[in-house]
Every structure is written in structure tokens, then in C-alpha cells.
Length: 286
Image 1: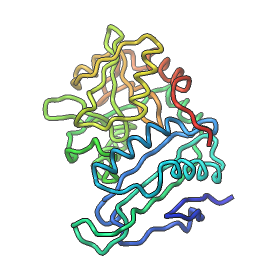
Image 2: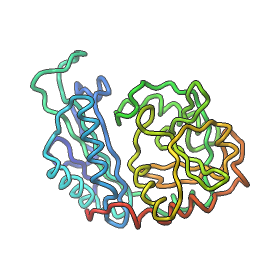
Image 3: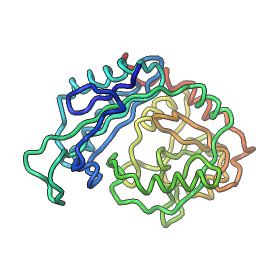
């Protein structure tokens, strides 16, 4: 069966799906996106993702492409048509198609694209058993990273540098030497006392949906969380480190810039968070 995408009101074959060359997402990165995990046929934390989509659209003054209730139906239908039991569903909204001009166009309808693909959960499970390596890079992104914008070139370059160094993620570091977040994830450490630490999401990082759910998971497990900055040196000396995102859930970090974290193996705290996540997260049947 061919993959199916939803593009501006139509379900089309993925191979022939297209938007106009003057779509502002292509011309200016004038758009936003969301990615939801699909697990066992359920879309995970969809309501929270749509809440964040609403905020991103509002911050960029882009209209909703359709009613929220209709968008839920489209997301589920794209997952169903692609027969995705485990994987992800991707949603992108741009300001729409208009003659190239920096100013907002008048009377332009937003463009929407929804795709879904299968991902073998065994791959992530095996990666979690071994953990991942992280490098650090200087922060070089625009100030509004709290908006989930499609303008991701600094993230692309950071993650490519990570790959070049044999790592799987890059952490952006501010001028004070404190960790901000990963190229496509939020950053966490576990202190020697077993406290989870992650940077506050009011400014300077994206308020990850999985990050938000992780607060509920930690509470269920009786774990304490501190929202504060932490330095690269503190992270290297931590009991554990990990990342969170819709596509990784909680993924152990076993080294930072070549420095092993603790004994260089995944720790028990992050693995317990990973195990408990789906018992807490919202699950909507596709």
C-alpha cells in the first residue's frame, strides 16, 4: 500500500504530495509544526500537542487551517490510512501561498500538511538499553525557540555535527555555560540525591510535550523535579542524564563530549521513567 499524506483538504499519495513553490513555509520558514508519537495504534498526548500548536500559531499570527475538532479527525485518518501502529504523525501549518514579500499577505489561507510513518519500537528500546552520546554546541538560534517553528537550520547543523563526532544528539549551551536543550529534545540530569533537573521552560527552550508529561510520570514514581539551569560540568558529574521528546520518550545519555556519565551505562531512574510513561500519557485511538 502506498503512503498517504493530507495536503490542504485532500488525501494524496505521499510520493506525489506537494505544496506551491511560493508557500511561505518554503520561502521564509513561516510556519509551525508538531510531531506526535503513535504507540499501539494510539496517538500519544494529542491534546497537549494541539494546545502547543494553538500557542505557536497565535505567536506567529497564523490562522488555524481548520477547526481543532476537524484536525483531530485528519490526524487519526492519516494514521489509519498509513496503517501505522507504532511510529509518528507529523503536522505542519504555514501562513500559506503568496507572492514573495516579507510583509504578511492579505486574505491568504494557511497551508496544512499531515504525514505519518511507521517506526519499529524495538529500535528505540535497544538504543535505550545502550544509551546515547551527546555533544555540546554554542547556542546560535533565534531568541524565540519557545515557538515550534519550521526554521530549524541551526538544529540541523548541530545534529549533523553530533553525527560527525559519533554522537546522537547535540545540546545547545548558553554563554554562561548552562545547558539549554537538545537539537530535537529537552535535556535532563539526575543529581546524586536522585532529583530530576531540567531548565525552566518560560524562556529559552521549547516546552516539550513529553517533558510536561514527564512531570506527571515523576510524581507517580515519587521523584522530585527541580526546574533550574544546570551547567555542562554539573551534567558531566551527574548520577544520570537523559533527553525527552515525542520520538525518544526518555532516552539515557551515557556520555557528554566524550565524558562518561557515572559508569557510562543507562541508569535506573531514566529507565523507570521510560517504563512508566505510557501508563500516564494521554492516548487517543487513531
